[in-house]
Every structure is written in C-alpha cells, then in structure tokens.
Image 1: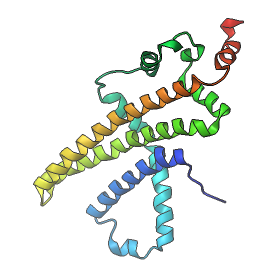
Image 2: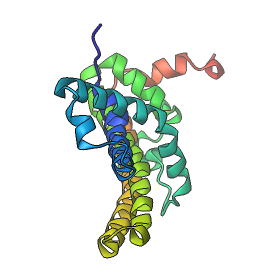
Image 3: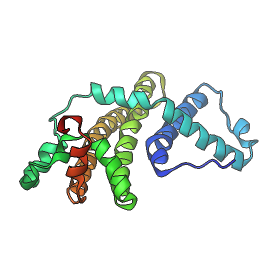
Image 4: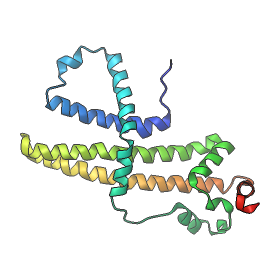
Length: 208
C-alpha cells in the first residue's frame, strides 16, 4: 500500500500539523515524557514516518480550529472577489458565471484545463495552510505566557509570546488575502473559458 500526500494535503494539513507535533513535543519535553533517550532508540526512518503521519492526522483533526479562529479574528474590511473583479474588469458585469460560487467555477475550470486550475488550487491550499498554522502558534503564545511566570527566562518568554501572538493574527489576515486572490484568479480564468455562460445558463432551472 502506498501512502501518498498530495500538494493540497501537504499545505492544508501536514505543515500545520507539524506545528502541532512540535508544540506537543515541547509539552512532552517540559513534562519529561519525551526524552532524548526515549527518542534516540527509535530508527530514523520510522521516526520520520511517524512524524509525517502524526502531522497529517493532527492537521486534519485540528482543521476546525483554523476555521473558528478565522471567524473570531475581526476583519478590517470584507472584500468580495466578484466586486474586486468587476472593478478591474467592468466589461464582465453581465457575464453569467459571476453569479456562481467560486468553488463551482473551480470545478468547471478543472474540467476545462487541469493545468491552469493548479494555480487556483495552489492559492487555496496556501491560504488554508497559513490559516491552519495560526492556532498552534497561538497555543505557543499561551505556553510562552506561562513560561513568563514559571520559567527561568521571563523576558525571552515575553518576547516570544508577543511574537507568536502577532504571527498568529498575521497568518489569519494573510489567509484571507490568499483566499481573495484564489477567488480572483478563478474569476479571471473563467472569463476566458469558451461558452461557460451558455453552459451555466443551460444548467439553471430558472432559465428553462
């Protein structure tokens, strides 16, 4: 049996999951559950496989945390990809595809040309990656705050707490920007798909 991690899985789940693995590894070391002696006896290949699998599973299980954090963090401005697209390309205002969901349009784009759709998928995966990396960084900030009072280097811990908190909030903001770019890219590419408006109109029950 082959275990293959795709690009989307790598970005959306495995990389954020690796941060969770690092965080729990830190907790295990602080609680003396994980020691150099206990890890040193594990074969390197097996250790790498375990870390990769754990990263994927933790990233998958913790996916809702990224969604929740995105809803909690206030938006400075709510930008709709269709509105931004129409500002740049007002000649497309009467096109039927603008009324459809960008996820549906991405499916149409993938059917039309998978290679072209890769750019959109990459942007979406990157956006999910940076968003899902925010919760473990926030957890790290909480751990750093605890270290201010319980550790031996309170000033270093305070600096890390501020840095990790800022990084977590910045990642949420950047994920929204990447999501906007993915939506924009989808609309821009669909603009040039031949007969996309006719196909959407033919599939609309209201048009029949």
